[in-house]
Amino acid sequence: MKKHAIIPIFIPHRGCPHDCVFCNQRKITAHGASVSAEDIARTVDDYMSTLSAMKLETIELSFFGGSFTGLPLKEQSAFLAIARAYKEQGVIEKIHLSTRPDYISVPILDNLKSYGVDVIELGVQSFADPVLRASGRGHDAACIYESCALIKEYGFTLGLQLMIGLPGDTEEFDLFSARETAALKPQLARLYPTVVIRDTRLYEMMEAGLYVPLTEEEAVRRTAAMYRILTEAGINVIRVGLKSSDIMTDERNTAGTFHPAFRQLVEGLIAREDLCTQIDALLAGAGTKNATADDGDGRDERIVIALISNEKSRANLFGHRSENRRFFSRHYPQVTFRFLRDCQAGLKLADGKYLAIRM
Ligand code: SF4
Image (tube, rainbow, N blue to C red):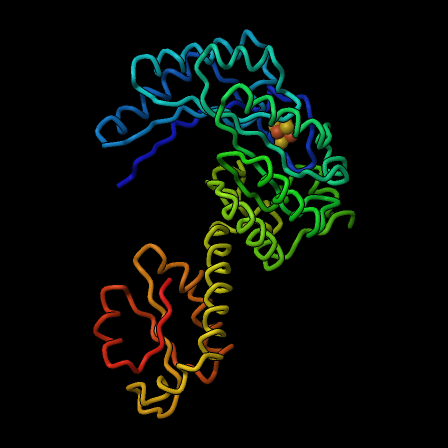
């Protein structure tokens, strides 16, 4: 059952005078309406008409989109006053917002604290200065470290967002960014492969041959390596890849750089790599001889390995569109694989003919 829900409040580009090369918000919001305090109240009430019937542990009101703390303090306070009122009434449990590292200061954090803000996410994108410069971010890495330290000092929950494959980026820079994030120990992180959206400077750079997007395979591989670094450091990676609603445009306008199931590609690759390590160890081990037998298909003397998953890990075992299944068959032609659910595994393994790997 769903335990956590988010009421999203989109704050357009208005809070942000910058022009990051990958961002299309300025163009979108130039034509869009701004958000008023009344809009926020209406959105919360609309959501609550559905959410209040659900048994949820936490409901968060989340300001996302532009850079919330780049808005004039008075405007921030007007929005936050509504959020705080809902929190005080027990309608929501948490107030969450996203912003830029260079829009964090003592007066800003004092104000956020006074309105009961819980979570601050920083759009860090990279810890490498060449990447920040080439992406038009308008701040350097030193600013990120300072902001993170200040946010933690105030006791807010910290979230960091990283992008993969920005202009000037390399695999080394991406892994460095993941390691720096791990060292800063935020509670939350998001990983976003760069999506090239029409009507952005990045799109123009690509058209002019000044920027080459990562291939999907490379983006998945790098993101998987970063995901490992973060999760091994105990960081909750709450998002991998953009949702189609995030890009605020038709998917056809993303130059083929958007994949709606990116998280599954990444988690499928991680599962595959882990399983390969275990399969290799099994095949190299002494027990292999005992598992060479008729596997029930009339094909004698094959090694049979049962890959056992629960309902939750099953999608990663198979991978997106069953690509892991095909990979295992290709990569281990001498092995017959059985894909079993936990509940089937006991019976099938009882005769001792299968080697087994449990996910
Ligand atoms: S800081 Fe955020 S909103 Fe502003 S231009 Fe960059 S990505 Fe867009």
